[in-house]
Image 1 (tube, helix red, strand yellow):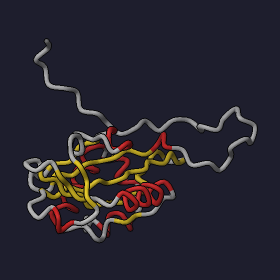
Image 2 (image 1 turned 90 degrees about the vertical axis):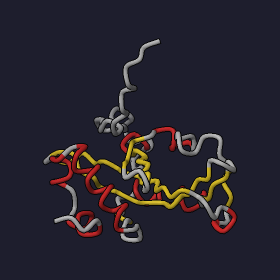
Image 3 (image 1 turned 180 degrees about the vertical axis):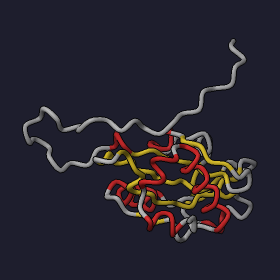
Image 4 (image 1 turned 90 degrees about the horizontal axis):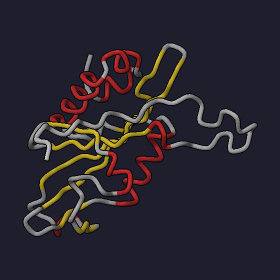
Length: 170
């Protein structure tokens, strides 16, 4: 087996118009081509793109039974699932929709907390170009801001002032 570290998965590539050549059929339909799930490990202080989260199969979620009651997972390790939508503009791509969902995982008991309806609704809000990160804790905001800046500074620079303000980054 190859002992080289696994290549980190980047954001989904911004494609050309996904409706091109369809002559109006499906116009206005939202596409998942430009959305990527970012998992923030609050305790470790890092963030990674994990496309498995699109189907609740991220590395963090695998092997965990999720419960809708946070109190039933009192020792859960905190995570955030952040839906990041990149939009192609005339000036270049930017982070157009960024929404965050809370999640906790207790590997020892193989249980976790998350609200599946919240995760689905926040994904939808991200696709619709909403910025919803102000409810995150300060440490997580800093991790996310650093991750987005380091991923691609030009995309970050073109992004909205609301995103930068909500993540408290000047």
